[in-house]
Length: 203
Image (cartoon, helix red, strand yellow):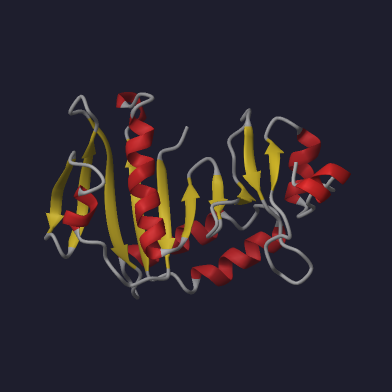
């Protein structure tokens, strides 16, 4: 269902193209230079284009600033409210956006590890949060924080809620996407109560 996934980072550092090539040899520089690239194409083992990766700096009147404003507008009616407010503050710290634009019709099960490896490399190198279309936001620790998932989604996602001090935690939990009650509690910013064995042994 995803069309785009973005790393929003407060870092001003740009990872050179040749460093990204160490993660995958199937990258093609489309725009810019090795040190100051703007757009990359990503191919799979079949030599089929599966995604592009674009780098945008967030400066006044820049494409990055426009994208950030669009993302902020898109969460105005999303929940939990406290996570929405946290994101708005975080947006003010963002200096760059790395955008993956997927071509899902050409992708197979082997495509995601390639894209995930590149995205994780960028996130680990720069820090930041992840935004995924039809899905929502993940904090710096990779935990789900804002609900924007498409209708009819199933499966589990590892989520976390803000506590009364405005901090993430104290624990993460598995959110069942097809459990309406669990989803509603998540939207209210309420973490499920932990059972005895979970509290004692982390089970």
